[in-house]
Length: 317
Ligand SMILES: NC(=O)c1ccc[n+]([C@@H]2O[C@H](COP(=O)([O-])OP(=O)(O)OC[C@H]3O[C@@H](n4cnc5c(N)ncnc54)[C@H](O)[C@@H]3O)[C@@H](O)[C@H]2O)c1
Image (cartoon, rainbow, N blue to C red):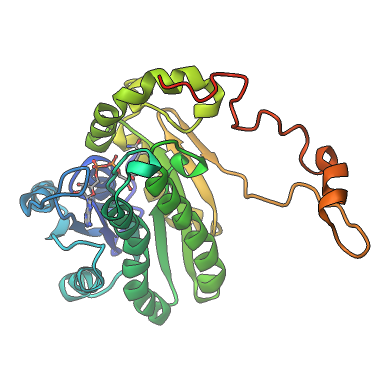
């Protein structure tokens, strides 16, 4: 039975014109929320723009009897983020939910990654979250309520050839943890989701990453994080992720704050939070000799930890 869990609420979905963002926007609207569908409409690698991308989803929601407006600003620009937040307030009179989902990728080995590839990826993901949240929080504080869901990635756990993206996404997790602690007392919740779905971005990533597949297969466990989404399977639909993302915005999730969750295919889940694994104290502190002597006690057997010397070495594949 489809209850209208978000009746009267106003939501923004960044990157809401395609892929998972589109699915989030449609489900929010079906649950009674008025939706600002933001999308710059560029390519998955973040070049170009197309104003029809956000508009089509807003039209789709309105055609189904929902309330929606399109916004085509880039979240990577402070003034774009400000206009986006203003659009919600000017059109619908308030703002309750912010889903930071917009994303791009630029993959390459680190020595070939240009400054622009680095800056653009950080700008859309990490700065984009900062910018929208900065302008949404004064509204949330006045209402003493608000929900933020930031879309992270399991790439953040370590993703060869995608280090700019991984760094941006793990930055988003740190931002989420920090803001949950900073804003919780105002009734503002902030959680992250690491999703998996077959989307335009996933297809474009696979296309560009194909040349590294033999290397990644040879690296085996060392390539964890280098997941080709076309190996996920047909159940990895954007809608499967939307259920968890939108559920986090409902009152049923009122006590969930500062968490990182997972959604993909048939599964949802909760990530553990990093913690200090072990400590050793030495009166007067440690020096190089004492660290030498206690290497195994501190770090276990590190001989093979991503060093690959006795697997494939530094052979070119
Ligand atoms: N597809 C996956 O398996 C996967 C896995 C982990 C994380 N993610 C993340 O999930 C989110 C959605 O990804 P998707 O796979 O649905 O991708 P997608 O390419 O289908 O959708 C992303 C949308 O963001 C928009 N966008 C890009 N830059 C923007 C900007 N500066 N301002 C506004 N809009 C902008 C794009 O135009 C696009 O429509 C992204 O943050 C992505 O990094 C995806």
